[in-house]
Length: 152
Image (tube, rainbow, N blue to C red; front, top):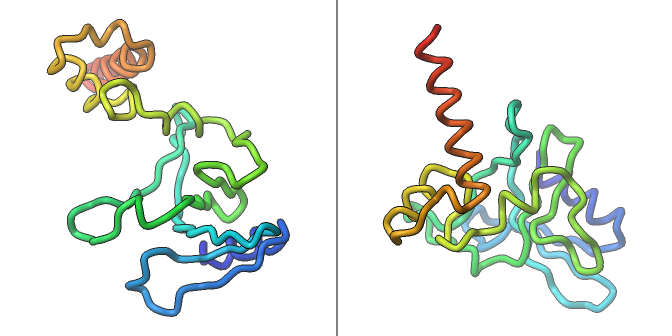
């Protein structure tokens, strides 16, 4: 369903859209713009966190699949069939959706700062994670959730 929603969105933006016939293809859609340069697009169904508003969706690169992010140019994340986000933004556009740019910008650790994995990566590199604004805020939020669970 998300692939069809993404196809309609790309068509409305003036792209020619081609869908993959096989589920083993390296991307879901190929879109041709005015410049005729093909864009390889992987369509994902995503969700937004109810507490932080951050965008969550499965990414390529897991060992169970042979696909990596090198096999595509853009993710198209469809949230609830009403919000469509391209990461990175399509040529000539900018990302305006809330909670998209900052969560996907990797921090100095190579991980998305603000996560527990990135916090621990700072520690492994002998860096103070509290110096990273996103990691410090993420840790504070995790500690608050942990405290709430203990109280209830």
